[in-house]
Image (cartoon, rainbow, N blue to C red):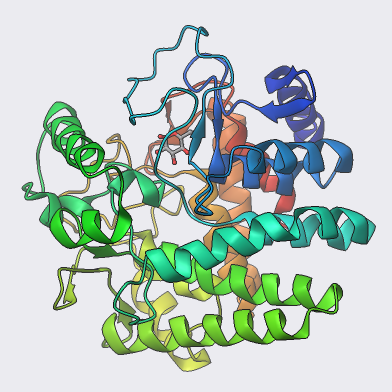
Length: 396
Ligand code: GLC
């Protein structure tokens, strides 16, 4: 690929959709023809490099379907008639889903603001952001432990990750069909209690995930900065404190011998399954420099774990669940590489970050804009014309 920037630009033109005043990007025309929450945040981050107007439109369109309680749904079916090979899950609502996804919105908005300093845009969307993050801080933390819960694996964005095998009562090796069935059963339970988050979490799926909480910490810090730009000093203090409290709670409940693990159940049982999630706290600066040094040396650069020919696999190679071609069970996704890249840079590992960037570009050059890649061979799988590859433009 001669010019990766040009290729991304063309991909984003191809996947751009307009519907009256709404505009968004589909992650993949054939497989994912709707709008997704964290995808739209990635799109806005990517678009901020070459089309700030489209980046803003993507965010405005995403916010337009916010629920009264503040939740922003993880899927918006703008045009449900579009044929799709994506297994359609009924979430109990016609035009959107009823669950959320990793809250990357403040990060995307902050990045847009860094480019054009358009304070009117920030003023316009701030109330939506305020309600969304307040919703997560209250409804997803009913016991005030300062950890944010997810009520369904799909809220993590990593639908089939082995991090959720234990809470779903699945063995490390099982079929895609078995996994889907478990998640469909959970959706039926979620629907039966009307997606009442505290109730759903308490009764069906009580998981505090590492990336979701690390993403929350980083986003709350940036939301505090956005509030400060609007001279909302009380809000700024509130969100900054909330970020610090989550970071502390993560250390208290998730950390064991230098590694953060997700927890499940009311007793915060650690789920010790090694996935890329162990690197997510680097993204939010939650580790000390020494802890980061150890983590990277022991796990990321370990050829038996995450240092494959094309790093970094989403699951460590020494896990029984590792499957180099399984959905969220081993392959490389460019978004997880992007999180790792940003985390490495936070701690001064510029050379390793560069290798992650080069490996990501090599995967796209070898196999195209595919959804995920075999970490050993580089072969591409899943959706085609998949937008997340554009994140290489933000590895700089
Ligand atoms: C899959 C992924 C999810 C993503 C969606 C659209 O469901 O697991 O993270 O948001 O596809 O790309």
